[in-house]
Length: 277
Image (tube, rainbow, N blue to C red; front, top):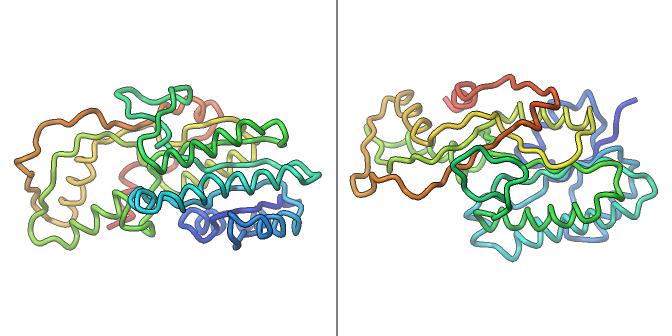
């Protein structure tokens, strides 16, 4: 018998992709209301007997959150709290998956483990961490809770405010050259299909707790720029005013917990970048 999966954020890039990939595996029930509305949430929760809920609804791009912090806090934190409080009132306990972010961590010169002291590097990260803390304080009232701290997943359908879509757009439509700073920062990029595959893995094996979700491999942002400049035949011109390495801004994970679950990746960095060509 197919599991009944409730999903918020179903109209986002991840939500659409996950539903499309696993529509034959599960029965999906999309939440199309206001996550901050108690009535909308209660009506949705009471309409179906969910086995699992994937909470992906959020205000994400950093610039958007910075410019609209109060509203983003309302959606990302208070919306999660609203959903969770009303979920706990149901007789049937279900498995709850919360899509969080690596931005709850501080920058680090070493691969980041899940027990690293939290210090959000952005307002977006702060909204997600507040939601995490609330969920963890109530977790014993669930069948299970999984908090996935996702590093840089990417897809060509993402907003141009995300790094790879932004860089591709700028390089592709530049003239014969691309002016850039030398970006030493290291990041971990994960293909959206691997992200979906891992969340399916979480559902299948009911993986609980906090888990870093990344490929386990880090790349300087320079690598991404050079890759696309070569593909689009554009010369790189470095901004001579900023050539020194800035303070540490590396953000990449230790994925030991993910590996112990038996999950294996299918896509590498070349697969990720080639999707944009």
